[in-house]
Image (cartoon, rainbow, N blue to C red; front, side):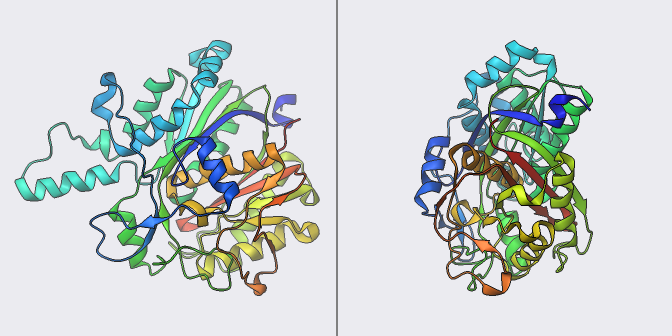
Length: 393
């Protein structure tokens, strides 16, 4: 393995769009404020719930790719627009063919697909210009990103439920380790839709109140939407992706292993990949969905994997909801901001913390010196990923 691989890979730029704002500055300011950005259910939802919706107007895609226009791709474009200089620099430095794209999505533009299906039921025909591969599959997102970035390296979409845009960091690291590319744009995008809102309600885990991960009074999840991206480069300045860990416990299609064995293995594998010690981990951005089972499982896994390290634990889903296919990348961006600035946000809604969890959940923002931080994403079917990031060298 190369020296660069042992030291990890630089994360030279990142961006996010979600319920907290349409620029990274707005998102981070909202996170620092400790105030969640949650709204009522979108129109057409036949029950009460709370969501993390992007409420700002989103510009349409350029005319050249207007056929790919969707709310999901508009959020992706909004996030990418903040990275223009960094993307241009990567193209110039490495060459377009040496920069890959690896992004995650769970439902892609499912909201557009639902509208098209409703139109078909009403008129017997799909709306003009609607095509399944462009609007109902990750294909449309990938094609839009290739045009918007000008990158010509390998391009792959990962659709693995809630772990989708966490898994892309693992894939990108393998590409860099193998020398297949010199830089990778990673990230994810997912838009709110009735399919997920009604689906999670059918599972009896959707809360009609703001989510309260790790609280004694937690009652379930809120769903959200957004897009987030990060640029990994073989060399450069910034926080570093040091290790990745993946596991599959296959305990149940939608319920986590109550002992958290797969989650523990993912965290341990991330530490092993980096040659790092649990004692050096000062912060865990938890998957933390706010359900009784998930939070208890993850707390047990953190205790088992990190032992006496007793890191600060935060779930940021209380701010923007669970953004599903965008969650892993969104929370990685939150971790990168914490490593860069030496702080952790409050875990929104956690107070009073469930004393049975046995972990240090931050109910207020903290200033602290951080060397290493883990970001966890755990998906349906027991598909788990943990990312280990380090502070800038």
